[in-house]
Image (cartoon, rainbow, N blue to C red; front, side, top):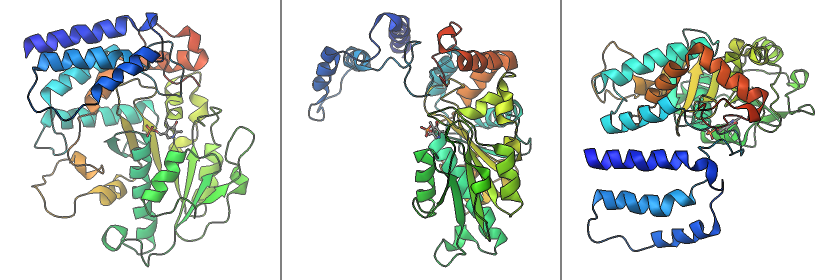
Length: 375
Ligand SMILES: *Cc1c(COP(=O)(O)O)cnc(C)c1O
């Protein structure tokens, strides 16, 4: 094991060191090499070292250079050194953090990270949180809590009785909502097409005055950080309008929510704390390895009601059970990399990471991972 892991670390370090000198996109020859992967299921075992050698020989040249500073696609970010190294250590420890009793360290890290994240993102300190795969699932998770809450207020138990016969929920989204938010609404039975699409301005910002009159159970989804323009919806105005009509306000802030950590950009998220739930990514601007998304819900009990296991499946103590807040039971201990990233950056480093990359993608501090969001 020692020899294999040491060798693999060498291969990985060399990959990262040579990223600046290779083409960002794979060459035609590298893609041609992928044909070697197409073979019948092997009948016999292969030595682990040889498996890794084969993977590196065929796979590494065919990668997209996303982990490097010359990759400018999307807003997907890379990995901070501490976060990548923590990911390796966590892989070796192979913790299953769904249950409190199964991994005390994983639970402890989750609680510490949750408090730190709510602090740096300037969200209400008592909010519940879920560590999930990405903003798509974070939107799904937070909106499941929203669905629970608005129907519970109308006297309907959606977890027990489903949506058939339930009071209808009005869902309003900006016309430039991210497609993953619309997918999440579809998964929740709220419909991809039955939502009310509120007009947006020339930057894709939802026009608060155009939110329709809301009656009965209602959810308004806004966006902090439009992936095409970088624009933020008028958060305070939307919250005021929606809340005055009893609606739940959800924020898709996959990359934009991180503006809160940079003094020069924090004004962009000034109004978000008034919302009821938030989704963001850690694998974008925080620069932790894939996959890593976060959902926060002001009413932690609503999140727990939407996500808890109903049957007394395994003993539950007095403690916070991580899996009572997420769609998954068994999963990766994603908070390990989040903890390592936040610990290595500190408040100051985090502000620099977001501030510098938001200001100019060409001024990336060395070692600050990849380009993070080039918004
Ligand atoms: C990236 C992004 C998403 C989807 O996030 P995933 O992590 O890919 O699931 C949702 N909303 C916005 C605004 C995004 O930028």
